[in-house]
Image (tube, rainbow, N blue to C red; front, side):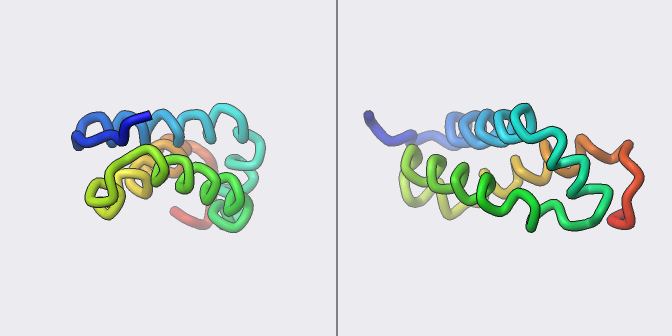
Length: 87
């Protein structure tokens, strides 16, 4: 499989991976937000997604942090309605 070479495609892939994490780990995400330990609770899943993203995009695109931004947008910002010491 050819590596993704465009920023738009890399963003879409990052968001798709983050969306899958959100879909399949909703309970853990809610717990992590409520207890202000989201990244500890999901560390294995986030790192597995990061490895997948890295394997699918060109190295210069991996360095642009599209994956980390997608994690924040989808796993953190979308849960702003949950009571948490984080906010």
